[in-house]
Length: 121
Image 1 (spheres, helix red, strand yellow):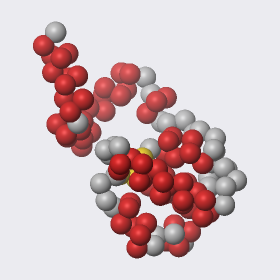
Image 2 (cartoon, rainbow, N blue to C red):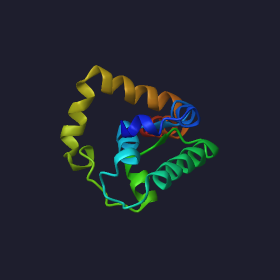
Image 3 (cartoon, rainbow, N blue to C red):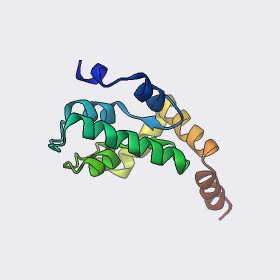
Image 4 (cartoon, rainbow, N blue to C red):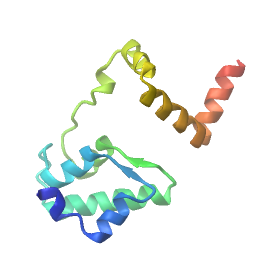
């Protein structure tokens, strides 16, 4: 209910546009699970600002960590960052993960360049 209340047509258009916003970010904006103490409208204003800034800079997503920093709340450890490198590499065996990595490399010029440089070394 809290999330639906803030899904105005303007916010829906921003969230479903070119900048990806994860469900974690939306949930944080709606419910303040990380206890920023910021009022609802200010958390949503911060999200709007992050989306607009990301779009202006050509970025593709707003992460939960970036959002929590913007609202001044405590950071919640990312499950992936707590995983050993071997466990992360094993995730590449999943077809959906493999495809996401390939898609990212194909669409991101800096990543594509980095992969090609490493392959040619």
